[in-house]
Length: 501
Image 1 (cartoon, rainbow, N blue to C red):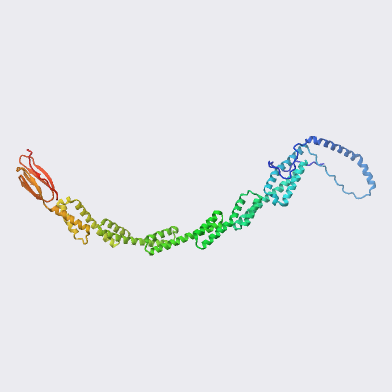
Image 2 (image 1 turned 45 degrees about the vertical axis):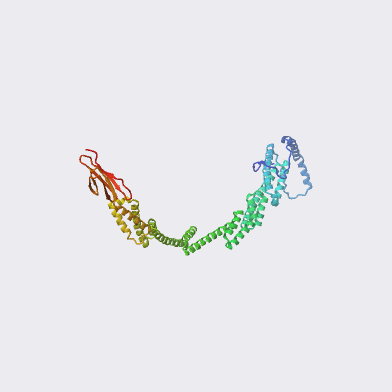
C-alpha cells in the first residue's frame, strides 16, 4: 500500500474579517489527537493480524473447493483491491487542519466583499455554486475532513475570484455606457447604467458623479436649446447667459461650451461691425475725434482689419486738416487781440503739421515782428528813465516812427504810441534848475557850460543826469551830480568851495 503526501498544495495569507455566510460553527474544545487515535490504531492492528492468518491458512483450501465445483473457463482479470486510505501522523493531520483553516480565513473577506457588491443579485449560477461549495467546505471542516475541506475552500475561492473579476467588468462596462449616454444626451439610459454600478458598488464616486450629472441633464439641454433660439434671433448677450447657466449646472457639457464660444464670437463680430459703422458715420459728419475713437477701438479688437486701419487714417487726416484750420483761425483771432505770443504758438503748431503752409509762414513772420515791437514799447514805457540818454531817445523816436507805418495797428499799439510820444515829449522838454553859490566860486555844469560866479541863478535843461563843478583858488573843488526828471520838483543845488587847501 502506497502512502500519499498529505501536505497542502497552496499557501495563502490569513486575513481577519467578519465570518461569511453558511459557515458552520464548531466548538472551541476538541479531544487531543493522541487520545482519539490510539484505540483506532489498536483495532486496526488486530484486524490486520486476522486477515493475514486467513490468507495463509483458510484461503487455499477454500479456493480448491470452489475450483472443483466450477467449470473451467478462461481466466478472468482479477480486480485489484482498493487501497486503503493512508494513515496520517499527528503532524500531517495538524498541517491539513491548519491548511483548511487558512483557506477559510481567505474565504471570509472574499465573502464579505462579494456581499458588499450584491453578488447575489447579479452572480446567477456562479453565485449559487460559490455558496454551495463554501457550505460543503464548512461541513467537511466541522467533520474533521480537513483534506476535503481544503479542496472545497480552494474551489470556492476560485469561483469567488471569478465573481470579483466579473463585477469589475460589469462596473467598467456600465460606467463607459453611462458616460456615452451622457455625451449622447440620453439621461434615462445614463441613469440606468450608473444605477447598475451603484447597485454593485454603492460608494463608486464616478457613478455617483455621473448620476448627478444625468439627473440634471434635461435642465442643461433645455437651457442650451433656449440659448440656440436666442442666438438665432440675434439676441447674443441673452444667448450667452443661457449657455453660461447650463455650464454652471454641468461644466463638462461640451455642447454648452461650444455654443458659448460661438456666441461670444458673434458678440465680438457684432461689436466690431458696430464700431466700424459708427466710425464711418462720424467721418461723414466731420466729427474726426469721434471717428478716431471708434476706429481705434475697432483695431484693438482686430489689429489686422484693413477697414478699421483705413478709417483711422482718414480720421487722423481729417483731424490734421481740422487742427490746421483751427490753428489759422485761432492765430488770426490772437492777432486781432494783439496777443502775439499766442498767435506765434498757433502758427508754429500748423507748420509742425505741414512746414509749407503759406498762411502760417506769413503769419508767423508778422506775429514775431509785432511781438518784438510790442516788447520794445513795453520796455520803454515801463522804464521811462531810459529816454534820458540821447541814444535811447533817438531809438525810441525811430521806433515810434516805424510803428506809425503799420496798417491797422490795433488799440494796444495805438495806446503804446500815445504813451511813448508823451514820454519822448517829456524827455525832450527843458525843466528849470535853481543853483546857489557864494559869488566866489566858479560854477560849471557839464553838457551846459560855464556859469561863472553868482549868488543864485536858474538854468533850463532837458531831463537827465548832470554834473556841476565848483572851483576857487586856494580851495578844494566841489563836484555834485543831479538828475532832472519830468514832473518832479527839484530843490535848489548849492555849489560853494569852502575847504582851504
